[in-house]
Image (cartoon, rainbow, N blue to C red):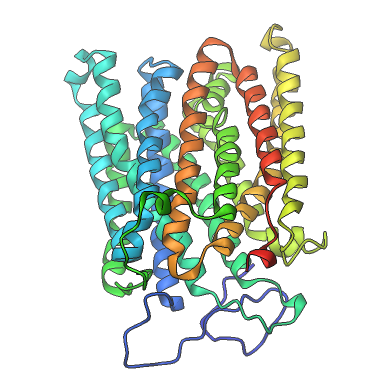
Length: 458
């Protein structure tokens, strides 16, 4: 799907996204109304940040594994990344509604620079004399900056889609939902670039070394800063309601946002239970791959995942008569299907866990590759619908607060999955990680059954 231009609605096709048409005016832009220029600036910063963030993750992961750190140690190092995401999303949404999306985006990029810069210390020769606990604590500290940065940038990116679209109630039924299309495009593009980040990070750590790899990341992080500062409306995303929030208002976003956020905990926890830590290490150990090969494998997976997210509204849900997506309970079908696929992968790995890998290396690689491809497809559809539902459920004037709370739940799920992944992989094996993932998806499916339709919410 091509990203729409700013020309309003002069010609409508089934692939066209309707965007708010902003007339020239001498007044500053409204705080709850984004022009396409604002959206493009935020999207560019968000996507470029994602490239560096995932590349840094691979650089840290493989760099530490190269230094003989175990899976649980690495999981603990990444725990601060996810834990700060929980806090940042919770209070970042409030910050966005008070200070605007430009402030969140700029702060996120600057924090990422701090986090990457701290990692340069790991290339010093005297670091080899540090204890493992010392290195672990230092990386935990450095990753906390990147964790906060990621979710501030994500908050700006996802909130901008709600503010940039015009949900015209008078459009024909087959015109589709411009909000869903724009959310799907941004989320899919971000994840495709995330796959490229996996590959770039693996190639850089393999061939350039830690210092040069991190230097490239610093340069790429600096690129969007001038555009964000100069071209983004500083009032974008600021809520009209500036009353002091109570503790209940911070945590209780209403039935729909709360249920969706709870489901998100288990959806993304199920993925990170085996994908973030266990799978990269398992691939390298089982198939004797170098960092580049492992990174390329994961990159292809993420790129497929991102591409499917992009086309979900028009080319997957629409032919299945599920688009425009109004019946939220239809998501039960996709979540249940994801659970079945994950169970099939877990069953195969359980069956061959005690057999020599040399006897079935080709068969295992083929089955895992096919299983992961199917998993990527179905997970991408689930994620795309989730990303749409949160901005559909959120009130436009408080979109930053609602989206922030939702991605707080997302980060908590990832934190839980990452820690369990490191522990279970180190002591039991990847097959236990994946069976636990099946359990998470079963809970997610049950929660999804209680979602209300979008039309009922509106």
